Length: 378
Image (tube, rainbow, N blue to C red; front, side, top):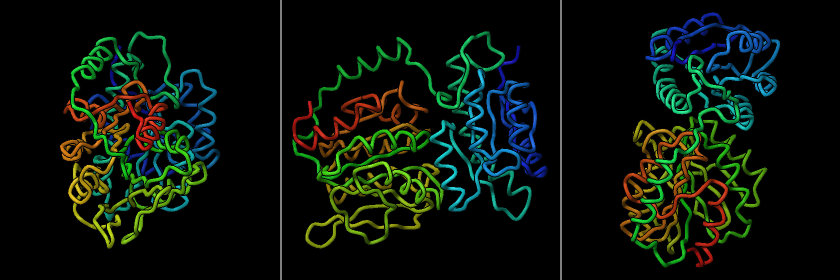
């Protein structure tokens, strides 16, 4: 039996299917088992081939990506889904809806001058996501070649149960944390998040009261256009106002600011002690723009000891270096726990670095934030 990640490629462009198949086949541990030229055929082939992963074009004939995701919910053995979306406002809106329906993550279709450039861009986008998904499914023992009974669904793909050893290790970490969080009430909430972020934010932010009393600033790893769609989507769900951040904007209480995709975002001190947003074209950090470290570092420099930081689900370690600086100044740091993460990468890096005060399930983070602002956090 094979333990390779079995992938079905669904796209209405024969050229793109060929390029996507070539890129996926070049990745270690991956086997492309089929292709589908429309959404209806994709659903049929999922049932026939039982892939571990479906790469799904959002705009296809017969059934679009959203309809395919709805159909997959009826499948007993549905795969994880990586969306392939156009870098447009419409593509952004559709992608937000699809992520809410349980897709693992998304990539954007490359707009390159040559086939080779398209391959290179796709490889850079797909490689880390495939690596994270293989790790998740291997840990859970549900690659198709493995003798298991559990099935993957779009709503649970990429997640893993916390092992007894991991739970024990987290308990030990908590017991070893003798540093106390700053006693000063925070004047700012910082959030860093990546893979699984839209759904995590859709759980966390609506649980915060409209009169939170301080601003919230977020870096979510996303390309241009998509962050505006994310902000609009979240704004419709939250008591707080949610918007994409604008250059030279002054932070105000009870408002959530999301860094615009494709740019870096930092905070600096403005007139009268105000907090001023700057949007820059500075280079990527940790292969990310926007980067969590870039934001956190600016807050540590200009507003020492004034923030509460939250690190949520995501690949890699972006945010950990910035958290080190924030912790030196007494800021409280909360990390999402392993069991509720889609990808336990960024929170794990922070926990392993010893810069976390509390490790909490996603649904417990909002109440801890509110308690810290009120000054009665444990």
